[in-house]
Length: 152
Image (cartoon, rainbow, N blue to C red; front, side, top):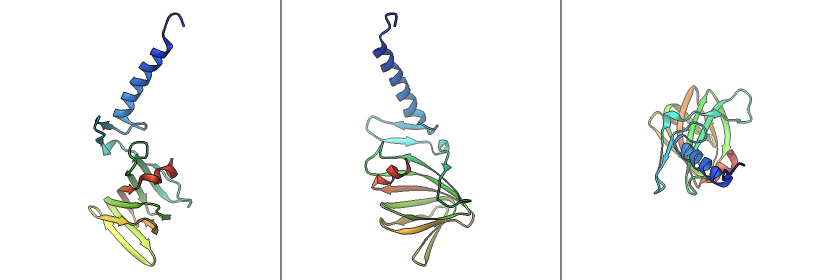
């Protein structure tokens, strides 16, 4: 290639792309990661994507923001729902922080409802329904982070 070192060009391109991805993420998510492993994420840059619950008409959107690729212990992301309900069985512990609206977790004839500012903890092995009578946006954290293998 006319005296151009292809390996050097490939290394430079890879370095530039990695620097860009570490600042903006793969999907426009703005992330900053320190050498220590501390990661900052600008929540305002996270755009949830359609999530298939298996039920036509459900309006459920989510975005994983930390996965097994970045952390072996915890995973997290945002979910939004509009007048929807879907069943789920958790193979992990999950903590949900309600940002806006009302999140209802239904299980075994009981319902736990959380509103903006509330926290709901769902233990591993729970078979539940995620539900909202209107709109809800919440932040979730899971442990261990194995669920991200399913959503990739």
